[in-house]
Length: 352
Image (tube, rainbow, N blue to C red; front, side):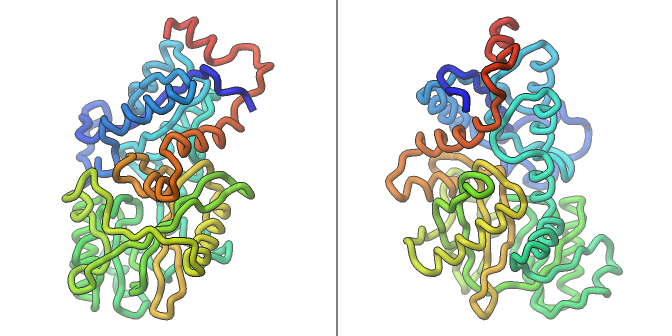
């Protein structure tokens, strides 16, 4: 592994409130920037990278990355936070471009990011790997509802969204009429099919994970806390109404439940080929059996509100050490020191 001393680290990201103009004329999805970062998070991460001994260069979103690459700028490695704007492959766009230019980057590769964003594909692959998921159907048009052979209650959400976008009070449905109304809302507001799955009434957990393959390890387990008298699941609105604050969660100690949930999450992480850091969400059925809901290989890193940093710091370890561990995992993909033109030298040649 190449020493990180003064390696040039590019930082790619999308900011909340970012203009859509460079990304074409397609209308934004409802709450499209909920997954994007606050400027304070980007600044804090850049300062941590500098403190760790790297030279950090702020790049920004995909159009800025494209322009700078075409100008001849290069970086030894890119710390990628960019979520993208459009399509099922939006989280993979920056990594795919970096792969073409042979620049290493943090977190998972384009294939993994695309697979994990599309929840039905994620579930099919996990089932094949022997990881429990809830039975589901994909509803693309109204007559698909008539073909669903799953017992009510059901749960409906967009096939490819994060941060609970599309999940609302009407996501849990008790009959075909309610299901039709909810699917119509999802089609109209998110422009994509709905994923309809068996509703799991048990507790919900999130597992933070570091590493890749055999080296992947759970770093923390948290349980989502919901008011069972109101909506017993987290909605997109509840997240938007409380920006910059952690959701209602309880960090679990090293208990039998935590170890069991963490073991399932790590199996899912390895089965999908995720790497460096991320989260796995699970929920239990009425018998207490955990099922994987979602795998997030591009985690939020806000030091005040993102679950992975909060899980990490709950054991007394500083945020700085979490970023160092992510970089150490990614640096295994750096080219050897015998490469003819280190990216740092190319960056200096370009006047960066």
